Image (tube, rainbow, N blue to C red):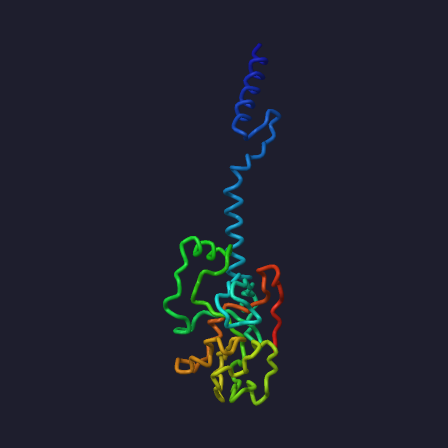
Length: 238
């Protein structure tokens, strides 16, 4: 009788545990309900997204016409943030995203809302930071760059081949410049839409003479990821 009571008691305990969704009658642990796992899965996904955005790849939205026809307003590009960690420096012909060196963007830029800030912070939507720009690297530290009349742009005395320039534009746009010696550690950048790009040409009165610091560069734009109809890699044009 005592043995039977003990067995009955053990079965009762197993049954009680089973009602909590933790342990089955046969002693094996049951899977948690999905709604209990969901917060953990969301947390892991957010951490992974944040790590990827911080160290590997980040999405950016194109706000203006300054890089037409290579990039159109509303395009989303993926930017490589990994290679700079290994000492890679921006090269001529690369399309790069960089922080506003100061005064390149209008002060009245719209402030992103809290949701945009949160989602862009973890990399689940393009950056909401209105203080970022995207241009093409034309010359690097040590280069001498110039453009007169209708062009072409010359780097170290050699004319550049620029098939990406917006149709109908001249290489100088409406702003001839140079010759300018680019300081070490800095870059001369220009938009592909030469007559609609407030780039290095228009900021020569600022510190750096219109150049930007390499440390301001977030990374190289690798590909147009959205819309799908415009998916295309962004090759380096030298």
